[in-house]
Image (cartoon, rainbow, N blue to C red; front, side, top):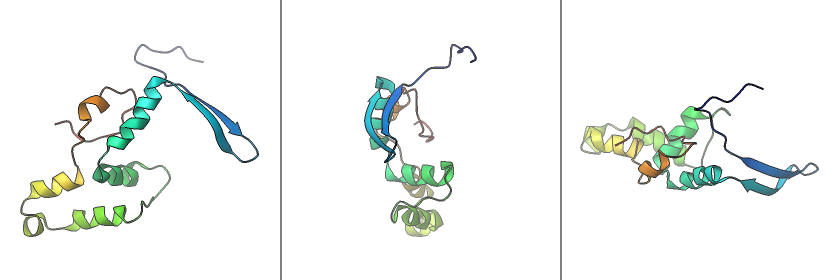
Length: 115
């Protein structure tokens, strides 16, 4: 095993799994993992739709009608329907109200540009 570099940090998660049913019976996690998990609750739906589609390693994922709604907004002519191009960008790449907090987490998957 290679030695850890100074910039490499660990996020701990221990799982007790029932091998017969392949279900998690118990989970024990460090503060960093729990903070990252709770930060997912702060994501705007537009960010979730974009990340699921563009960053998923499992192929195309569908979250109810959210993907369809996101594509409809992408295809809109911004000036004709929403007034300005900025309005369209605010819907497609909404700001996260907890952005400052999320940027301090060890695990941060939100790729939205900081404001």
